[in-house]
Image 1 (cartoon, rainbow, N blue to C red):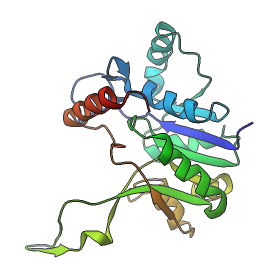
Image 2 (cartoon, helix red, strand yellow; image 1 turned 135 degrees about the horizontal axis):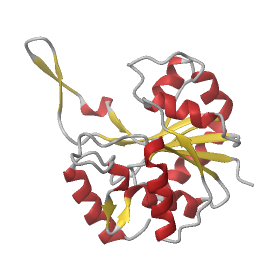
Image 3 (cartoon, rainbow, N blue to C red; image 1 turned 30 degrees about the horizontal axis):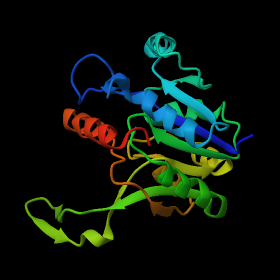
Image 4 (tube, rainbow, N blue to C red; image 1 turned 90 degrees about the vertical axis):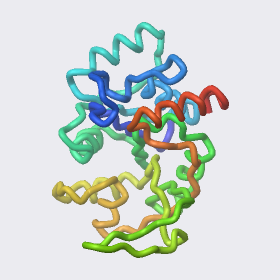
Length: 225
């Protein structure tokens, strides 16, 4: 029995992508993004508890999609709330693992090394997120001017973000507010330090048509991770 519950958030409706099909169902190399994502985690740890948050109106679509592809990966479906915060809070009620990972459903390019970095480190540290360094120059914008800032002081945050179950539950006892950008920010706000581990560069969040093209090329080049 795995000590891990993995929440895959797929509550979005893809407004930035355009069209009517939510981005988690768009195809990369002929396979829905969300299915790529679920398969990666199942391949890494087939005993982990998988939980997917979905808008209620897309549950039947997802089930039909899995039926057509003969996918039998066991997982629980939880109602995706109006905000990510609410989706995770709903999912926490069914988590059974000692550790809980939260991953964006539209990050299908996470690799096993990144997952391992997070899952191995959480035992010792209790709250872990994967990051990658910033390559571009950065400027901080003020009211009517801007100033160059050292990029070495910044990093890009990815998922899975992994926590001891009790830590994440304590964090989600806090009230929702608009400044919550991810689970790590809420956990940090609750008073717990965050440990950074190395992510993988291609682990992008697919939110635009360009992201979709990058994912197509990456999967074609590397196959399933």
